[in-house]
Length: 545
Image (tube, rainbow, N blue to C red; front, side, top):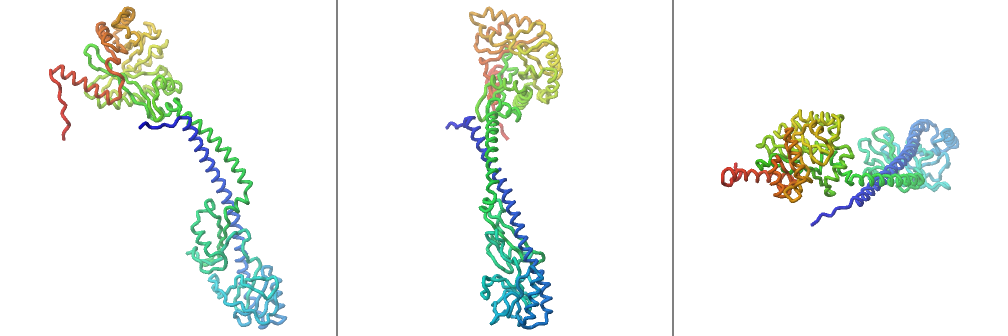
């Protein structure tokens, strides 16, 4: 089944959309986190402030009890009530002082409500574990002995009880809990004063204000301490910060649109031919594979070398050499590309050609890499040492159309020759170089362009054949070898051999092929040579052991 491929345009739109949505989600999350944490800080402050009032009241009560127990009165006389009212007047945190003559649960009188007939029985009190001095607490118990007083809170020690101002709940909280806990076990309620007892367990398993309800907790000091836990729902935060959230949302949408456009452009560029080639070259040549076309010695008809030709294919499909070569030149990635192809070719050929010393590996070089400002970078490349170590002769091919006047190319080729490279002029006959330039370059090999080989062996052989003969005369006079490119017929081969051309390559022998096919080609050549020399076909024994 053919694999379905998403078009680059759709891929770019999808990638841009995904990036835009992720950006919007991230910015929304950041904005909400800021608002939620700010709301939590406000709630924590309000919670801590209210707890501080409670603790202050408790501390004030500690001081007051000592004063009250020193009063001489043992009944609800006018003098006693006056003394109690005086203490309330002097302390702005106290609302009422209660007198329990027998120290039990029955109050005979109070500073605010006077005498009770009969005495007011508060019922069984709670002994708060927060206090170690036996204090008892009635928290928000019903009280019907006075108008407009629905419930009261009394903290009692001995014969006196005290009620304080501002001992209620936090008005802004949707739910709360007053409790006493141990510092070593903060999630166990030792004394439940008031509120939702289940709130502590939910607080214990919360993931923070960003992903759920907003909690705030404040506790006093000591191993056993009074704590206050409050909660508000996320909707409360949204209501309180609606304007800010709208501003953040608008900014997030604009930013996500910009990200969409940016990512869409980047992905479009990345999946364009230029982007694909640039990415491949800058990532170690992924997608580039060398193919090998045999070069035959026409005297022995043996394969003495090969030309390395690059092919490219990635997830988007194939690109032809005339496409990616131009891109590589435009993006100034010529040597990076050439070095990648040589490295891959040597890695392929080294184990294959271990018994063929001097095998010629021809690689096309770009003219720009032979300029003065680039040649030193080329010469420092490790590929030349790799070729020498493998026993291969690296042949640098440059186009005749790339030959320029001056000494730059001459010096660069001398450098390459000094480190063991052979020099070849590719597509010879298509440019406008003169004999003096060719002599100055002193190449080892001239490669005749296919256009001069096409007519050889045909009725129109005369003109092209004369040109080929002239090239042979020049090459012989200057000690150069000649290779004919694009040989496709037996007649062309015969004509070239009759003219004593040294080498040839073309589809008549083999097309450029991947390393697996090239290794089979060389094996076939070896078997033919063995058969010719021994008179019988060689046998291949399986590897044992």
